[in-house]
Image 1 (tube, rainbow, N blue to C red):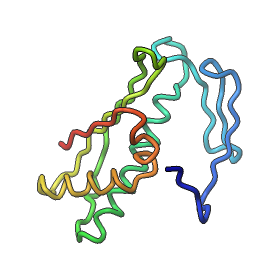
Image 2: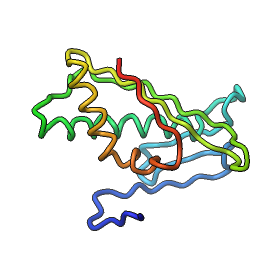
Image 3: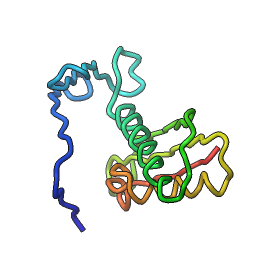
Length: 140
C-alpha cells in the first residue's frame, strides 16, 4: 500500500553531485557535506551514516509522540546508537539492514518497549523500511 501525503509539513531540498565521491548540500545551506565511499579513509560521510542519523533522530521524535497517550515522558537523556549496514544478498544486489540501540534511562523495561514498539508503528523511517530491509532493536 502506498501512503500519500494529505498535507505537507516540510520538504527538504538538496543537491547532490558526484555520488559517493561527491558533495551534498541543502538549499538553505544548513547541510553541506563531502561524500566518500564507506571504508575509503577519505574525508566525508556516506549515505549509510546520513540515513542512520536521520532514522535515529526521527525515531526519538516518534517515541515522544508514542509516549504521550501512554503518559510516559521521554527522558531528557534519551539516545540511540544506530547501525546501518550495507551488504549484498543473493539475487537482490545491494541491501541495507538497520539496528537501533535505544537508551531510555529511568524507565521500566515495559515502558521502554512500549515506546519502541509504538514509535516503530508511526516513525516515517520505520514505515519506509518495513518489509524492505531488516530492522532490529536493542533496548538498553
